[in-house]
Length: 334
Image (cartoon, rainbow, N blue to C red):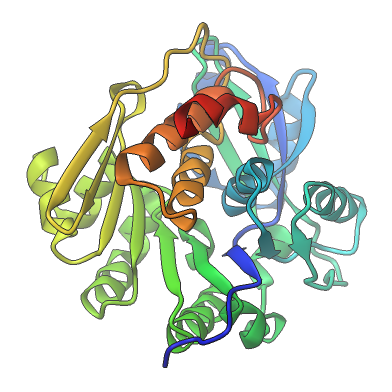
C-alpha cells in the first residue's frame, strides 16, 4: 500500500527514554568497579545504586539513543516525533520536558507503578571513552498499545533503536510499527546499537533484512562484522549492501561509509580539537545522515552532515547538541 498523504513528520523514532548521568572517571576506577571500558552493560536496580554511589560529581542530561538522534534532527530543522516510555516520576518529567523543549512531539503517557524512569550511568575516562551502565526501568515496558498506527504512517521515516529490541514488550511494539510504516509506503531505518544486541537478536535482524523490512541500516564497523560474520570491511559492507537499500557504517576517527545501489561512498571524520566524550557520536551521526536523506541530498553530503554532527557531540559532555547544528552544517549545505 502506498501512502498518498504527505508526511506530517520527517522522522518518527521509537527508543529508550533515558536520562544520562555522566561523570569523569580514571581508568583505575573502571577496573575497580569491574566495568568493561568503552562498552554498554545492562544493570539491575542494585547495581545502579552501587555505581551511582561510586560516581564523582555528575551531570544529568536527557538521553537515549534514538531520542538523541531526534534532538539532532530537530536542531537541524526536521519535524520529528518520539515514542518511548517514562515513569511517573521526577526523571520522567525531566525527559518529557527536554524532548518537547527541543520541538519534538512526545505523547506517550507516563507509566505508573514501582519502576523508575530509565537512567544510564556513564563514566568518561581521560581519553574521552564512555563506559555506559544502563538501568532500563520503565523504558523496557513500552506496550504496543502505546503506538498509534496512523501517527507511524504519518512519518516519512520510522527510525528504530536496536537497544530497545531486547525487552519483549517494545520489541512487539516495534514490529507493529514496522508493519504500519511499510503498509503506508514509508521507509524504515534501524540502528544496530551495540554488539551485545546483535549477539542476542542477530537472527531477528537478519530475518528482517532478508524479508526486505529495513530500508536504511546504521552500524559501526564492529557491528557490521558481528551481523555479517565477515571480518573484511569492504566485503562486509558490499554483502549487506546487496540486501539493504542503504547501509551506513561509521569507523570512528577513520570516517564513515555508505553503500547504496552498488555505489560506495566514504568521507573522513571531521577534525576535533579535543575528544571530550564520545557518548552519542553514533546517534548524532545518524541525525546528520537522516537529515540529508529526508531532504533528498546526496549520499556524500548526507555522510558529511553526519560527520559534522558527530564532531560537535564528542567535543563536550553529553549526547545532546550544545552548539547551533544548523550553523555548523551550513558550509556543507552551501
